[in-house]
Image 1 (tube, rainbow, N blue to C red):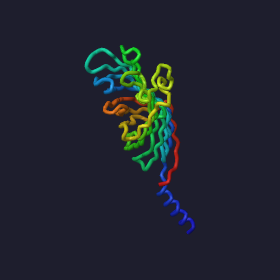
Image 2 (cartoon, rainbow, N blue to C red):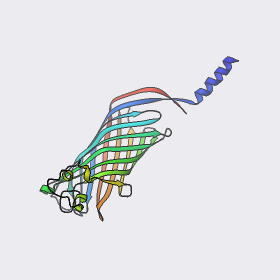
Image 3 (cartoon, rainbow, N blue to C red):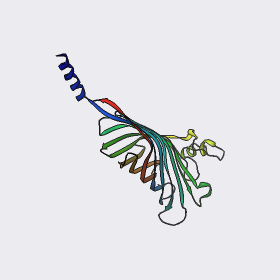
Image 4 (cartoon, rainbow, N blue to C red):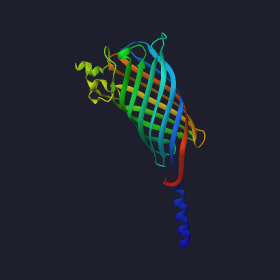
Amino acid sequence: MKKLFLGITLFFVGLTTTFSQSSKSFFMELGGSYTTFQDVKYSTVSYSGVGGAFRLGIERNTPKAIWEVGLNGNIGKESPNVHDVGAVTTINPKVYSRYLKKVNDQFSFGAHWDILGLYIRKTDGLDNNGIYYISSSDLFATGIYHKGKWNLGLDLGLLSFQKERMSFAFSAPQKGLEDGAFNYQNEALESPFGFKYFTLKPIGKQLYLRTHIQYQWKERIAVGYRWRARRFTEVKNYPVTVGEHQLVIRYNITHKTKPSTAQN
């Protein structure tokens, strides 16, 4: 009787216990990008061009959660849509981290934090006003849908702490000009890390959306598509709009798995 009771107990424990794997990866992504830009307070001319995209990161995937930290960005060349002068070089690196809680085998939800990002543009022929940048720290609500070898993700920008350099007449943040603080020796205005002139932009003050689609082709190789759009207004009725498409290949430089047990 004791053996029968023990057998029944082990049977029901087995029904309520699932065995899966935890993994840890150090990965690299390389690919191409197509970017667009328009700053209406400077000009109604829009810019677009192509470039290269990259990402280095560490990801840990367990039966309960996903952690990731890394560096990503792109480097590209853009041209205006109405003439062939004034080419722009763009550089956009970001240091990021994210955490997602797994609700079930298909859905994960959490937060993504671009800890520090720099969006830099250098326009040929503008001399002292040729450098434009946005420096920011951005917080997103994020979700992923898992289905077989497919991952589909969405990031919604909740809050940004940012500084934009260009204004109507000077290469300085609009807030600094409104405060009457502009001069050529004001380091807080010129430096992208001069936090005095950073502003908070919650959802509603700007639109920041990102999506991604990834297909896990092999254990170490995946292919993906990423899209992002950002729109904000520092000066009323004169918005800045930034867009990007990426096609990338991901390679897991190291990939370690180990079995783990999770309770249903």
